[in-house]
Length: 330
Image (cartoon, rainbow, N blue to C red; front, side, top):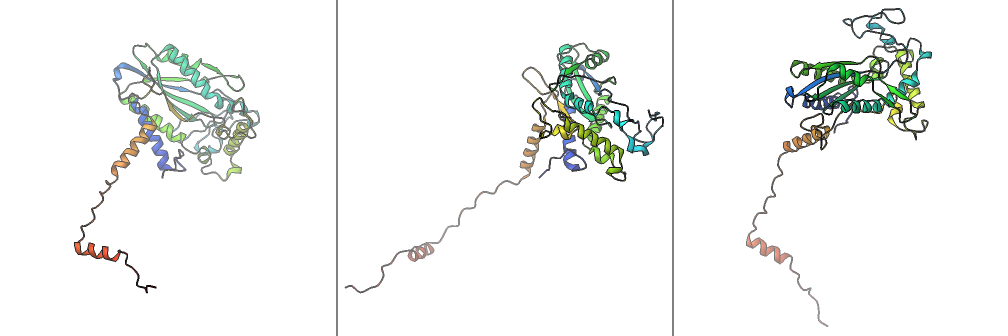
């Protein structure tokens, strides 16, 4: 029995199955059609700033930049990665509220893009930044009949805004928006591989990774930053009817976020959806069930009972025949 976990540190097998399913869906929207009929883009959308944080490179090969604290960090300073320079001045409530409303913002962005390019289809991976806020990597496919360009797509996405369904606050994307066009050949394969890497990172336990090699939770500044985010997420409303103290929504345990880490546009009567073949995780689960059923040996037919000899039948009949009891007649 599979546990269904998506966290690699909890169950590597189920997490890899989940990643592989979504990678197959991503490929089905790129490689299952005539490449010359479409334009493909990788759109990256980030959150706005909620306060300055430490810049710590992930490896020795990463480019080092001078941090806002005045120090050029190296990978050994993992305890500072994503941690605010001044925690008391960091907008924790604003960040978890943005995570909460990021789904509404993306829905408005998607509609804005389709208002301009009706044929647009999307595959979305939501990745956590070190500071504990979501950013989006989006594969965009647009028919060549709808003339499009990278700069036009960037402007359409970056300028999208949405009003929060909870408190009416207007939310928007950060300044770091990037659009890269790729081709179905080598670029397409590399882009799918890049998103698979993002999926691997998404499925890691953020707290466990942040604490790797640390002396303990109480001594980690990363851990204290995550605790502050959790407290902020518990204090905000996740819906107009929410009572934070008693609400059991998972958004209070996920730094305000409510959306799935991966999604793709679905097939409808008038749209192909992202996957040309209509591949979904439900279809993949059904295919696995059928594959497993085909591995089982066929049920053997019931064997006929052997014919009994006539003498045995007569003896059996005599043994079960009722006989009168002996007794004196009055």
